[in-house]
Image (cartoon, rainbow, N blue to C red; front, top):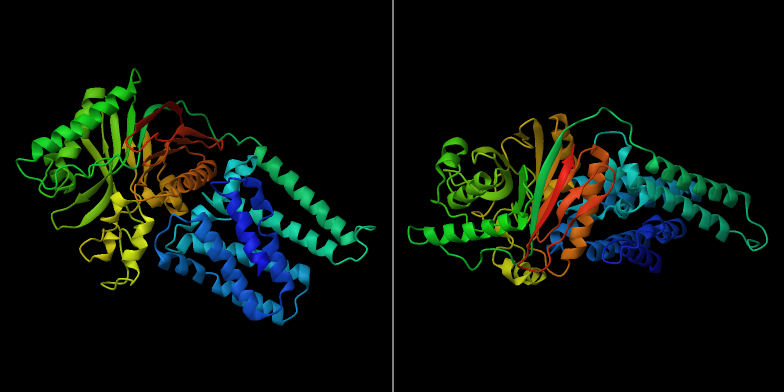
Length: 503
């Protein structure tokens, strides 16, 4: 069982915080060696589950819900069954390893796409987003398949390395004579690395020229930058206090812009936690049916008019029927609320709960993973009245002049489907708007993993991805494979990143 554990450890080291990126090219060799050599079905199954569980607990240590980890592991049960069948029918070792790698790849892709765990942030090839191999994300069998492509490349190199090791270890005279098969595998390994590097470094084919530019300001905040100490209810007496608080925060943001005059200002989701029902903005109610967060919306409208900038941000919104949504809003430079787009992919355990009123016995115990200021709101979806409603119209684009903006709300930025849908709508720019205030000790780990993932999507789609989040980065992932941005410095920091962006 040492070999699966070794693979989990090596793969973890390729992820944050160690970020030894290139270990991802050899991390799975011990696991594939184990699969090739082990014959006992029970040990095979336990070894695979042990590897995956340890890797998820290390690289995905920010996930506080054990059921999500278990559900992700369930995707590996067919993989285990497939491996056992291959063993039973005595498939040749090299051929066996090749089939096992292919099955592993398919299993990872299915788990990333369909498991409630945000598995795209722990795909085996994700660390290659921080290397020159990031350019491989331009290739694939469909739109925005970049994370799959780099993962496939990483598994190919792991497969060839495992084959080389198996061929060499099988020879007693290896010190004097390098076997013919080993030389062939070594040659293929070299070709794969050179070809992969060459393809990744090749310039992107020009599909046309665009004169579009956008002056954009992006804000992120520290995890403590919230309104937990603000008014606890909305009434005629607390309304002035709420308005004063919103105005002070946005005045601070305006000061931080300095001389920069943005055409678009992007604020993180949940910059304010003031979403009281009955706090109505007339325009929001009449045009979009929103009956809460009126003071916050009015504050953003005032900011837009004062600075002559469009404003994009994320809010929790309510309609007259009491349905609750995660929403992106766009306000134009004249202060008019021009578009609202609701979140479609809801997060299991925090935005919706598929098991009705049943609550896991360990629920309260698991809250210690979360920072103290978010525990009281944790797993709100476990309450029947706390669940959010998915968007009636998924992945609705927004327009800003002649630009098409694609809002990606929180975890929607992890999955390829929204990118595909928005590209078909003619998106010029993706905006990933999030709140990571629920994260505790592993915040930096999650930040880096999600930035890598969005960089792969930027390369794959050929469109920039703007990132703005509470306790997250403020910056831009470019189609060139480069991320440029800043992170909040301190819990109460409001940090801007400004750029004249070419589209």
